Image (cartoon, rainbow over all chains, first blue to last red; front, side, top):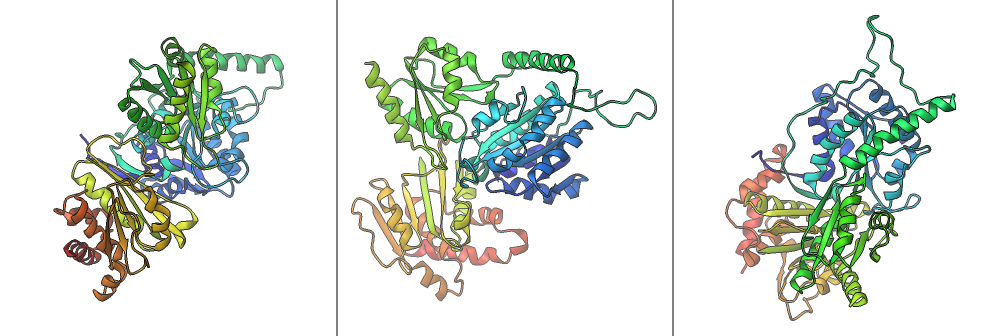
Amino acid sequence: MAEKVLMKGNEAIAEAAIRAGCRHYFGYPITPQTEVAAYMAKRMPKIGGTFLQAESEISAINMVYGVAGTGKRVMTSSSSPGVSLKQEGISYIAGADLPALIVNVQRGGPGLGGIQPSQSDYFQATKGGGHGDYHLIVLTPDSVQEMADLTALAFDLADKYRMPAMLLADGTMGQMMEPVELPPESGCTVEKPWAVTGTNMARKHNIINSLYLDPEELEKTNFERFERYRYIEEHEARCERYMMDDAEYCVVAFGIAARVSKNAVSALRKQGIKVGLIRPITIWPFPKQAIAEAAEQVRAFVSVELSMGQMIEDIRLAEQCRRPVTLCNRAGGMIPTPEQIMEAVKRLEGGNA
Amino acid sequence: MTANILLAGFGGQGILFAGKFLAYKGLLEDKHISWLPSYGPEMRGGTANCSVIISDDPIGSPIVSSPDILVAMNLPSLDKYEKAVVPGGKIFVDSTLVGRAVARTDVESYCIPATQLAVDMGIPTLANMIMVGQLIRRTRAVSFEGLEAALRKVVSAKHADLLEVNLSAIRAGYDLA
């Protein structure tokens, strides 16, 4: 087993990206993700890579667009207000069918908001934050280990499906330190015949573009893209099931909310209450199947979120109104306590008894 | 065993550093650990705190809201977190800077004049590690053996000269009866 090192979540993202073959990073500092940029600034020049602090987030995402067109692994990172600024560029990257990684270490909003952890960019991440019909593959780490592992996976999935992927973390995940076993060196394993790398006058030139003035042609690109999305929804949804085998109640939570929920589930189990947790690891594609199966088994769901209730809509769509779904939440940078989650589950029990 | 530790004080007192040392010490003892700092403006002068969990089992939430062990290095920290400590928990207070005793009677409290002792020893910035030494003695959250290996993980190579003074601060805290 490789040695475990103690790292901040933000640093684990940066190191994992480098190990996954990313040599191009463009960003602009913002709390609580600045350590990603700081780490890249230190390491990239030593390994022949590019670290560039752009003049703005908009500029950074368009640099990402440029490198993505060459087929090289490329990323940017920011936190909520900065990711809002990147949305135009993300839509262009999706429209041009290019792989890239966007990291959002979320903080409280809306507006400039605060700097404490939040999950209130769920809608923006999963429903297409920019204009047009598109999705990102969205991965939600709940430990420093997953900050590293899911970064590597995000690059692989982005390459495989020719689309941007997002790592959606939050301030606690970015700032906390845990032991991490860093993933091995890897790189792109798929051919990229579409990349603009110079023709050497030996082939027809490639064009990277998201502009289609002929509506029939534009419709065709949308239909093709959504065929791909359908396949991804069937094959790439990921989640962790925790104590679900005999569960009568199901907590659904991701990221830091899932960590706190695990404490609540363990404590409730000690009190004899049969509760389990489904932790989405991808929120697009959402693990609909796991939720639908749980709806056959449990009496009710609780969605635990650091937002005013965004994922709860996907849970309701997946369980198709068969069971009550309630919300247990904090917002604006606050985090629910295990006790708050325990009370939310106990209220369900009262209501169903 | 699980130790839920909350360290709190002013920015600049080495709260995060002390927490990082304990986390690395736990890691080197093959424990599960997590370290979560407060971040943002408070790092530059306001109150700073840091949650450290050292456990034999996988760790759920990294947030310590009900500490077993509280280290309070200033009065606002004691005022804020004293109530949160679990019954039977342990509170460590830097009595040079905190002008009152621990009010709770259902916890064990240890008042150490850490800042004064650090000044007397000629290492005025290391009151944090004196508190850590006392914490190790009273809680055994981590072992007193192999301190140097853990210190090497948190003291950067270019400040290697600080290893020895950190060690003596921990030992001084440990030796306080």
